[in-house]
Length: 398
Picture 1 (spheres, rainbow, N blue to C red):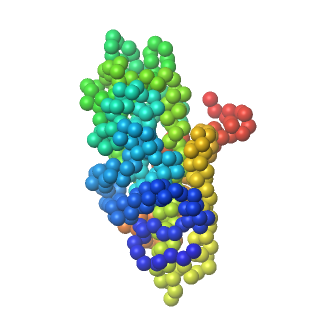
Picture 2: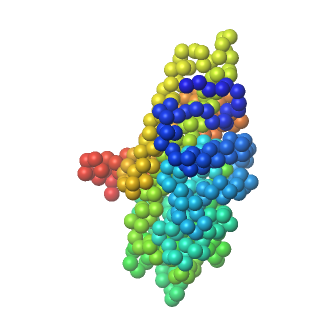
Picture 3: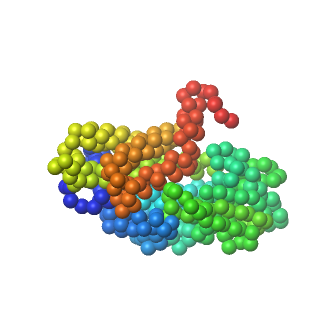
C-alpha cells in the first residue's frame, strides 16, 4: 500500500489494509466520507488552538447536525437512526480529528440522548430529543462522583420525594458538558427505597451548580464539570420512568462502551497517518526516514495493531446489528483498543522526533487525549476484571 506524500499531517491516508471497506453499504460509505471531509477540512485545522486554549470549538460543534449524526442510532424524534457500523465510523472519524469533539458528541448522543431514548417517557422523548438532535439543547450525564468512579454503583447522591417533586442532594465529578448543558441526567439514590433513579435536571434550577475542572492535560477542549446539587427540586414529570435501578444505568453504559473502542481507533489512525506521512517527507542522512529499515519495521508494527483494532470494531458493530453485543465483549474491545492506541501513538510521537511534541503536528494531542478514553466508561483494570469474571466465573471485586 502506497500513499501520496503531499499534504498536511491531518489528512487521512489509506489504512484499510484488510479491505474492510467492502463491507460498507453505500449509505454507510456516504456518511463516513461526509464526516471524513468535515474532519479534514474543518475539525483538524481548528483542534490545536482550541486544545491549547482549553476552549470548546463552538463553530466546529455547530456543524455536527448538518452531518446528520447527532443522536446516533436513535430512530425518530429528528434523530438519524444510523446503524451500529455507521455510528462507529462517525465516532472513529471525529476522534481522528479531535478527541474533545468526539467526546462532546458521545456525551450528547450516546449518554444523554440515549438515556432519554431508552428510559424516558414518550412525552420526554418528544420534548427533548428533537432539540438535542439540532444541538438547540445540550445534554450531560451525571453518574461519577468525587468518591465513586469505578464503584459508581455505590453512588451517594440522594433523591427524596416531597409531594409532586423530588429533592436532589449530592456531588458529581468529571461530568462532560455539565457546565453548558440545559438538561443533565442525574443518577441519585432514593432515600426511601435505596434504589438508583434517573432524573432530567433543568440546570437553571436553584441549587444546581457546575464548575469547569481546570488545568487538564487531556481532552482540553471539552469541558468536564464538578457539579453540586443542593436541594435541587425536580418535578416528577422529569424523572426517567424506565430508570428503576442501577442495572438501567448499566444498560445505557453498555450501549456506549463500544463507542470507546471506535474512538481509540480514530486516535490511533491519526497517529499512524501522521507518522507515515512525516516519514515519507522528512529527509535525514540524504534520504526519507521511510527508507530506513527500522522505520519501516515500526510503521508495519503500527499498521498491524491498527488493523487488529479495525477488526475488533467491525465485529462489535456486527454483533450490535444482530442485537448480540454483550457488555463484556464491548468491554474487551474497549480495553484492547485503548491499550493498542496508546502504543501506536507513543511510536508515532517518537517517529516525529522533536517535532512530535508540537501541537501543530497533532500527534502529542492525540497521545494526551487517549489517556481520557483509557479511563472513562470503565478503566482498563475494571474492564479486565469484568472479562476475567466472565471467563472464570470468579469475581475479583465486589
